[in-house]
Image 1 (cartoon, rainbow, N blue to C red):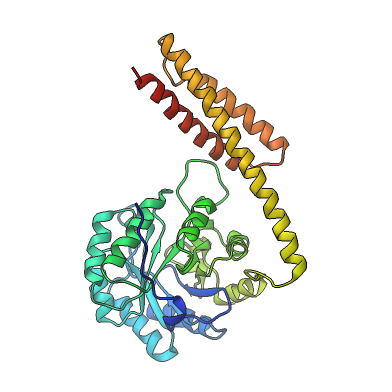
Image 2: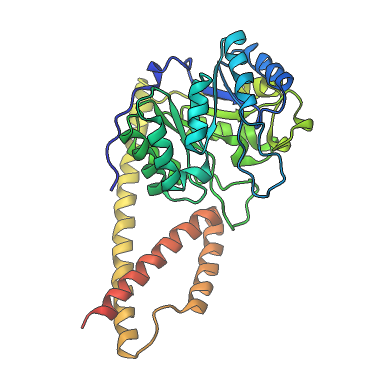
Length: 363
């Protein structure tokens, strides 16, 4: 069960300027002192105040560039001292946290692989106890909102109150143009549970290619999210990691200037009257959907009883595959995406199986 979080508003961190988007930018990896300083200066020149760079890089295969390590923290310290920027990096262990504190790093973030591991999260939370270091937590690799919330709770219980999240998408076996499935539904759910939580989106890891960064960043802004963490390198073609998804500082400036930032609300009476009418229609449609779902589960319960009486297994995968194919095709004819149809139907199927199981388990 999720608990309330005691969070200091991001406007009191002294990091970001409004209006949206708040922006964190810098290279995937700190590679050389010259690369770090050149990139940071390019970003500072057009108003980026928070600089990011990976110091320790979790890589799938050994032998890849796994980050420069502690020497890179000295370069971040130089960025902070000479350019007046706030600096941040990813941490995955207690040792990382202690080194960041030692070198005066202003903020840390926790990556997707780490946030999925409660043991590591507790280790990091214990290392942060008694500090005032802001922490941003990326979503776990898999779409598990409770695991994400659990990571936030561990930090908050350790006294971390300058706390926020970074949405970087989820691993998926489904075909997608992006490196990671955006999974906006889970982002919206987390936002609705913790509306006061600073909410960043990482379009670089979500898209995996710079050609997708603008559309993903715009989507984040259209959803009313607070900021972006974008990877930027002075010479992306030469980057030692994730070269394809990084922008030059000039490219990032162009992207940010292209974004349309919409107001969270409006005092215009035409808007208010129109939105109230449309929301009333949504309320009626949602009630109808709930009734249809209830009716469908009533039928599932009867199906379960029929299978029980005739000693038939609950799962009938041939039937389910045929049904899913037909429903997806029908959804396309209505202009609905395959993604939403599959998500809805899988959820309905799971609940139907649960209902039929209840019937089988009754004496």
